[in-house]
Image (cartoon, rainbow, N blue to C red; front, side, top):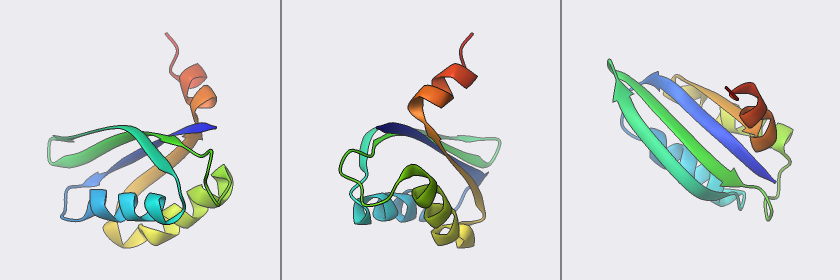
Length: 89
């Protein structure tokens, strides 16, 4: 299963490192990643693969949000199919 992870918040050192370390620790592969700074806000979107993950999507969402709470960013984890349907034009 593939999932889209979005991270939005104030720019600070370590956001990519912390999120990536969490994903690696749970065998969640990053397929594609993009990030930018918009008006001082850090915005990142990742396409991830949960095929070998040791967490299901809901558990990963909860744990990632808890693990990255100190960063002061908003994190969302959505099934790729749900994300695509939500953003279909």
